Amino acid sequence: MTDAQDKRYDVLVLGGGAGKNIAADLARAGRSTALVENRLVGGECPYFACMPSKSMLRSARRGETWEHAVARRDEVTRHLDDAPTAAEMAEAGVTVIRGRGRVVRPGVVEVDGTEYGYTDLVVATGSEPVTPDVEGIGDVPTWTSDEALTRPDLPRRLIVLGGGPVGCELSQIYAAFGSQVTLVEAADRLLAAEAPFIGDLLADVLRRMGADLRLGVGATRAERTESGLRLYLSDGGHIDADRILVATGRRPRVADLGLETLGIRPDPKQGIAVDVTCKAVVDDETDTAGTTVWAAGDVTGVAPYTHAANYQSRVVVSNVLGKRREADYRAVPRAVYTTPTVYTVGVSPVSATGLELIAAGYDLSNTPRATVEDDDRGRVELYADRARGVLVGAAAIGLYAEGWMSEITLAIRAETPLSILTDVVHAFPTYGEAIEPVLRELAEQL
Image (tube, rainbow, N blue to C red; front, side, top):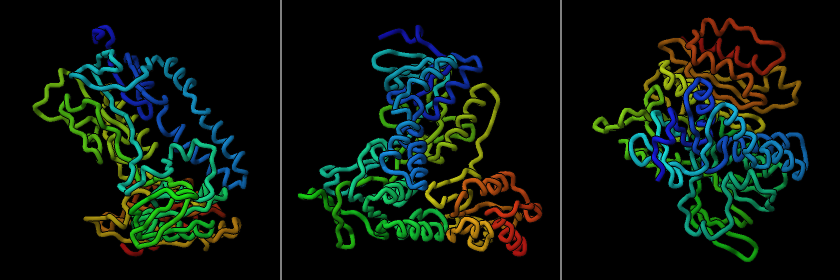
């Protein structure tokens, strides 16, 4: 073993996704910083998730061929080469350590037999796909989103397990390029945690593209067949396919990090508990030898989105540098980049508790912009707290919703009174105009 004192850093970051920004910012601020990553520096988003999926969705919208879409996707992901990103880290002053890190005692992390000391430890190890408990699924051809967004194959018959954001985006991608897609979701609708109209409208979109949706049924057993595989369902039916794409969720990557040594006991499903400063919750009786542990990104289980991870990263950096900053998650957007886009933020009417919620909505087909776009799909709903007269949640599905709904995100975060929001003027013709009648209806309910 190498003496940890010989390789000591002010800050040691485990995980190169959200951790990449944390390490770079702290190094630029003058802290000696090391980043430990056992896969690709940059994390899931640029190589296996956000960037390749959005590239493929764009290619699908443009009517490109599968071959062209794959080529462009591979350019976007730099052919899974993280050398440029690693070079950026070095330029910022970060030491990149390749391997898997594990805490062996307070103030010391071991990576492949070498010990490294730290004062501040940041855990940003992200999340990993969850394989459902389906008999025989390990014996048939399966993909997770990792393979679905890196392989050149276009399955003729594809089963997508899961009707969440990942399952919906990948279903649209593969259906658009000609796969016979069957989406299986145990809940009665897609995106079940959101307002009901969201899942209903998105289901209609996917069906128009030729996808077969099996909602309200679960997968019970899978087996190989001479022509591929067969998946049996809880309603007694079955589906024949060539491959299963597992999109049934992700879990925080917390196994075998040695965090128990520090008095941190991550929940396998919920991840590492953090306070408002993104400082990990430690058992009171634990002696951490004057060190501090922070966490950011999917590993915290707070909000599994890259933009949420980036936000937590900024919070961690501020607090490590002694500038207290508290995270506020009231207005973290939840976006699904299908066509049309799903954009929700704040309180969902499905799970809202303790509020006297008032709601109003408007169909986008009533806007002049919908006439211009020749598109009749979409709706926006806003939710307000009657007692305070402010917006607390919103849901929309429509073209470019990720753009024109941003003002609502700001309104929720700033708690802008409805009396001010109703006086905002939107450019003509835009989908943003749809927000005006909704705000006026809410104001009338106060």
